[in-house]
Length: 196
Image (cartoon, rainbow, N blue to C red):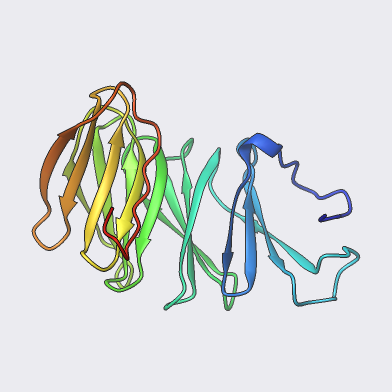
């Protein structure tokens, strides 16, 4: 059971997006403009779980988070401000990168250092080079809402809520194949070991 003192950022249970990133845990609040970076190995806080650092993210609705353990970068998709916060976990410095309308999900291929974001309103996926922060776009289905990466095959899978399909992006060529699935797919995951 995790206990903590009252944080500066209110985090609703249903809106928490959290992941372990280089022994840090980042917590993003759906309705706030800050995230909290938690280092569970530190005892430099009043909290019984470790040191919590507040980090300014986007202007509104940080919604999804992913990390690249190879580079120490943490990525937060800010749905309400149409940008991506790139956090250097070593310094906590934040760079804002502009993306398409309503980024709603994010995934990283640590092998290629590419970051993939679904752009819900523009029916695209933004692809960011993790070295340069340059962004390109690929068209997918209607209202892409979830994304997963298989780092072993370099394929990206996108659940398109309103076209009843999963888009499969070959990251080497950015060619897209549509695979019809059931009604309104909302989640997608891939096992890189079995490629299923």
